[in-house]
Each structure stands twice: as structure tokens, then as C-alpha cells.
Length: 312
Ligand SMILES: [Zn+2]
Image (cartoon, rainbow, N blue to C red; front, side, top):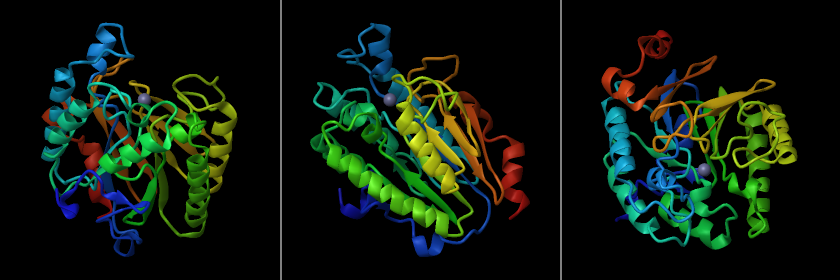
């Protein structure tokens, strides 16, 4: 595929090709984007047979769900500014058997996303491994673009982070340090610039419900989490969107909202397969999770659409 046509690796050089910073620096008007998480091709079968490690040799269900998600997004009017997928694109960990096939099938579906709706990818633990290495990260970047980067849309500054570097960087300490240094530079820009909002995308949430909850598989280690939350808060970041939990959750740390979105694929809570609609107005970031059925049948609620029109 020619370089310019590769819709899967637009994130290069720590920014996103096609999003012109010089044009997107200023606030224009309210807009919205779609957030999805964890299509994770293969988990539904693996979960059903109770073998998350090496199960997952079929992903027909996830194919259907992701196709439904793409169709729902393509029907939306007006179009979202972009579609961000917050990690665990596939279930097969680096080096496992079905990974290539899962990646191929996912890409074939995502190719059908309206060309006017750019795709933004976030790396998850299944994409680069629970303890990533320079090789697994490099492999991810070849397929899906940079693992961390930033971009501007209409006066709003977006940061995409690789949370595996906070979860376990034992096999790639120098990469963790590089992201830390980059992030500090980006947060300094966020503090200095007159952006309307700063929004972060990452796979593992800082916390699931409570900023002081104990550390487990589904959140970041407490001292790491508090350091990041303080940095984010100081830089004026309003919201962090994540996946990883396969259920909807979230909470607040001071003025910082942590939003955990359920999965397009396998559900581990009471939610249904879905996507989150995020409306960005001059004052607010308003979001709502929609089941795939609801979004494809009824579209975005009028109350949310009114927020887009009001200030235009
Ligand atoms: Zn995950």
C-alpha cells in the first residue's frame, strides 16, 4: 500500500499526518469524535472456553460487532472528526499463533470506515504485551503508527499515550524514559498554549472508579498513577479516555475526569457492545456511551446534536 494511502499508520513522528497543526490550532466550533475500545479479536472465544492465554482461535463474533460499529459510524451525520480505538485491537499477544490473521481481519473491516473519518490508534497490552520489549513496540508501530503522539483539532490538544510503559517497562526502560520526557514537553506546551481543552487517550485507565483504589490488572500502580494525575491536573487536562476494562466506569480526580469505556468486543460487565460519542464544546466535554444497536438504529441523541449546532 502506498505511503499516502496507509490509513493505519498515520501517526508518525509523534504526530498525526493529515491533521494540520497550523490549521487546527484555533478554536473554530463545537465538534465531536467517536471513541471505541477493545475490539480484541479472539477474546470472546477464549473467554467462553476459559483459556485467555492460548484460546481465541475464532473471532467471527468480533468481526460482526466491528462491522456493525463501522457501519454505525459511517451513517453518522454530521461526520465525527475522527474515530479513536483505545487499544487491544486484537487478543493474540505478540508472538502468538493467530495474531496475524486477527490483524488482517480487523484491518479489512477498518478499511471500510469513511475516508473522511481519520482513524487514531492507541496501543493496548494485547497489542504490545504486558511487559513490552523494543521489538514488540516496533512491530506495533509498523502496523498501527506511533505508540505515543499528540495532535490538534480545532483548538483542542490531544495526547495519546502508551500505558504499558507505566504498567511494566522492565524490558524497555529507555523507552519509558523517552515517553516521560516527551510527555513533560507536551504538558509544558499544554500549559503554555491557549488551547480550549487537553484530552488524553490511553489503554489502561489511571483508575477505574476511585483515584485511591488499590492497584490490580485493570489500573495503574498507585504511586505511578498519582504522579501522572498530578502532572495532568497541573497542565489543565480535563479528561482521560481509556478502555481495557470491558465495562463502563470512571470517576474524578480533582477537575480531571477519568472515562473508562466498555468494549466493541467481549463484555466483562453489565454493558453492551458499544461506542462512546464525545462532544467538545467551547466550555465542556460531554460524552455518552451508546450500544452498537442504538447508535446504528437511532444515531446520536438530539440533545447531544443540539450542542454542536448551538454555537455554530
Ligand atoms: Zn487491555
